Structures are given as C-alpha cells and as structure tokens.
Length: 115
Image (cartoon, rainbow, N blue to C red; front, side, top):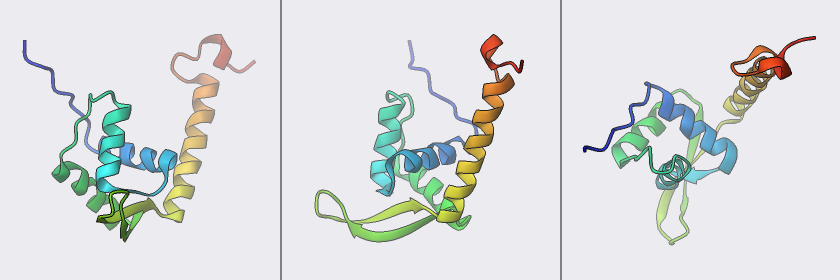
C-alpha cells in the first residue's frame, strides 16, 4: 500500500513556521524545517525549496527578519526571527483564540460554557 501524502492547506506552513519561532526563537531555515518535521512525527517532510519559499513570503510581508550568523557546525547560515510587530500581533491573536475556545469553542462541553 502506498504511503499517504499529508496535504496542507495553503498558508499552513507559514503558520507552522511562525509557531516554531514562538516556541524556539531565532533559527536558521534548516533548523526550522527539522523542528517542524520532529514535532509532526515526520508527517510533514520539508525540502529546501518548500521551507525557503515560506521564509521568503514571510520576509516579504515584513513578518520576519534575517541576519547572517554561524550555525552550530560552524557554517555560515541565515538566521530568521519574527519581527516585534508580528510577535505582538501573533500574541494578540493567540489570546483571542484561547479566549474564544475557553468560552464556547469546539469540544468545550460544559467546562467551556458561560454560566
């Protein structure tokens, strides 16, 4: 039986990349890709073209910035980090979603209902 390919909605990878920064801080592209693969249990496998296309989109939008640095294995690498403006907007959205899911969110049951 052929292995099923995981289909992601457009934009999902960008969200996964932003969430990785929220948890890990500044990383180079290869590190971001490996972390997403690790967290997904290898359900999401990223090639260089895929991850760097996402990074370019996010950088063009002004959501991330990049600086050259040295990786753990002493190689030159571009390190990406979320911009302060984007981090604040992401934090606001995360709080709004958390608040909505606590109240009446999917699967909330009685614990999430207003009294």
